[in-house]
Structures are given as structure tokens and as C-alpha cells.
Image 1: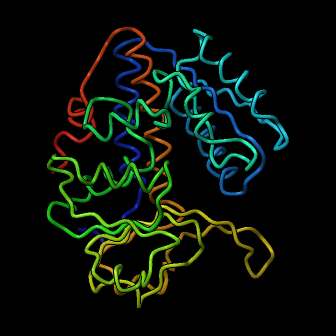
Image 2 (image 1 turned 30 degrees about the vertical axis):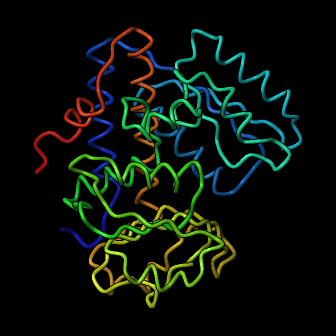
Image 3 (image 1 turned 45 degrees about the vertical axis):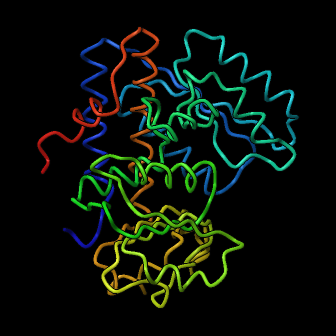
Length: 304
């Protein structure tokens, strides 16, 4: 197993499968990306999405909305996208402003166009291990482990963060009765007491807490696998913006058996899965249905 778990080769595998399906089925995929406000981490991710779409020959239409937009105005935009047959998938960039209720907006997305698995119907499919969209960031974590031969089966996996986008769906996916899952899962959050005592027992530690350099060496077990989902903007010594994860990479590097960099780790895989989900949406809109296992075979066949 490699020490630095780069997202690049994993993303390349996913993108290769995406291109194969586009060619095979003569698809012309179009995604609508909706961003409300200007969160720095979101801006970084959105730009990566746009750049990746160009390379994959997928059309990515972006709607930038002011932070002051009302919930009703956003719902109207969502409904227009749902009804537009030229839009195959919808990506709603989180976080949303505090005056907009996440659950109401999530329920307004057409489940068949819900590329980041936000609708309760799609989240329910994760819980029951049914075929559906894979939420992009949790899937990126699993794909990373699959590529590098990290088997979570029977291992203690600790997730820092309980968001509906990462922590909760990832916890459920790690519990799936599949060869790439079957972990023993603990989720820590802002009300968890003595977090370090819990993380020190983790064979696999996944940080998705949204706090720069939160995880330090004394919090991790010797030879633990560290998967850093966080992306946080900070100012460097020269005043320029730099992006760091939720794990203090430099301090934790020696103690970990393997660790993802930020940037260049999980985020890169996440973007590739978003477009893979777009292709899945296109196919299902043509009544071409494939199982999760079929898609995984297409991506990972022959790597181990």
C-alpha cells in the first residue's frame, strides 16, 4: 500500500469509465450546478467541477445565486430544472445560507436527477443497500480504499462529522454487507466527549468536520489509515489563499500508514464521481438500468 493516497489515479479510472459509457451510448450529458452565495471551499470545488466537465465533454451549466435569495425563489429554480428535459442531473452545492432549510430544498430535487444523493428517497436507498446514486464524497472515500487495497472489513472506522452530505451516508455505506465495506463504525461530532480517546482506536480515520488541521498526531493510532475529506481556506505567509484539510498532514504523516493529501486527495475523486452519477442519470432516463456492482466492475475490474 502506498503511503500517500493520491486521488489522481482513482479519478482517472472513474473518468475512463465515464468516457466509455458516453461513447458506448452516444450520450450528451448536461448538468445544472446551482451555487448560492460564495463559500470559499465551495468556490474551489465548483471551479474543479467546471474544469472536469470540459475534459469529459460533459456540459455543465452554472447558476450563481445571491446569498439573499429566498427559499421560494430557489424552489422555483429547482422546479424549472426538474421539468427541463435537456438537464440530466442537478448538483446543488452546499452549504446553503442559514435562512434556507436544507430538508425542504433536498426534497424538491427530482430523485432521478439528484447527483449528490440529497433527496430522502435516494438516502433511503443507501440505508437499505438498494441500487441508486452514490453520494459523491462518501463514494470517493470508498473508491479510494478500493483502489489502494485498503479493506475496511472488520476494522474500526471512525468518522469525524455527521453531515447529511458526508458523515451520515458514509457511516451507512461502510456498514454495507459488501466486500468493500463491513466495517465497525463510530461517528463523532460536536457533542462527542473525549474525541481523541475514540480516534486513537481507529484503524481507519475519516475527517469530515470542517475545521482546518483539527486532527493532530496524538489523536491517531500508530499506522492508522487517514482519509481527509476536509477542504479549508487559509492565508499563507505571503497572504495568498492556501487550502488545507481537517488533518494536520505534515504532523500526522509519519504516524499514519497511509494518508490522503489536501488538495489532490478525496476531493479529486469526488468530482469524478459526480460526473459518473450524471452518466448514470442519463442512462436511467433512457431506461438503461445497471446495478451498483456492475458500475463498480466497470471502474475497478483488473486493478487488483
